[in-house]
Length: 443
Image (cartoon, rainbow, N blue to C red; front, side, top):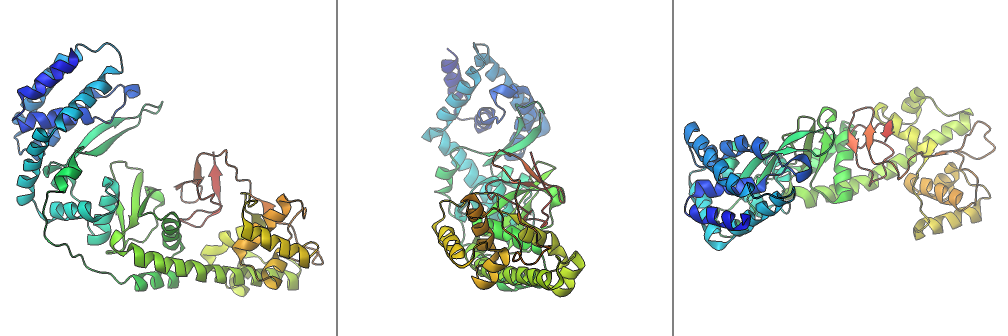
């Protein structure tokens, strides 16, 4: 019965784009059944969206939403269980995805695009050209390419975006505004013709060189993280954001959540930027290896590990890198490398040349880079070839073994205690990619 009423309501307003838009937004409500659906809470957001899109007065928008509420109550009366609303929403979405209704929304977008400002037209170009069409990513793209933030009302006015109210189903009952695209946007965009798009081209090489010269480790680590995951953007904790935002290259989107922000790079320069970052990673690894060798040679000569000040004075370690080098010379990776054939081969070579190899032996004599050397050490311990990996040869009495990381796969949440940034566990982090700190909290 409810399905029949829904279809009757849609048919009743088949030529009324305002009511059809309201029904569509009702069906796009992001709040789940377990959080109570938030139907009443979303009416004010639907009203605001209708007012902007259809250029209504406040009283006209309010009247439209009151009519929407009355029409929706007709089929809500037939709700028998808590799952019915999901079904009602799907029926509405399916009905409004039929060609005759899509055509109405298509005509609305065409009409709005003809009188839209440059922000809206730029957004449409981004949507058509960017490989990732997620709204958060497109905001990052806009900020990266143009050095400005999108004015969301301009995108709502286009009729393609519907910010709606979301309530979490957890104990925290967190709330947030979730911008939702109309579900048939791609089919509409395929028919939309836009002028040729030619954003300015930045000097990426100069940007990377500046980051290196100024020891901007936060931004370099951020770019490395994106490169290694082959992604355009990521979520960060806003208060811990210390990443350089450069027009044409990097961008930020503060989103509707006051605590977090999305940061990323322009897709237009991704290929060139990632190529430079790949070169930087190779160069950085060589440099780190040489600095670790200097630290270990200082220990061999002096009989003890250098202090932080001595690392800076005699080992070319920058003050911002102290925590990272402390980790490199004192902590082994936590993960297993039993399936890594290259590490297995290197470990085999190490045992052939040294009865009990040290980190210094692996770096200086076998000429492994620091990343490989630490992995070989972990592999040898896990394979029961050695009990521990000392920093320097055993004849140096003060040398202590590298400790295995306490990192475990059971941890689901990782927070950097220094900058308070939430980290993903998929990279198995031992230091924060945003501030360089190794002071991580695993929960």
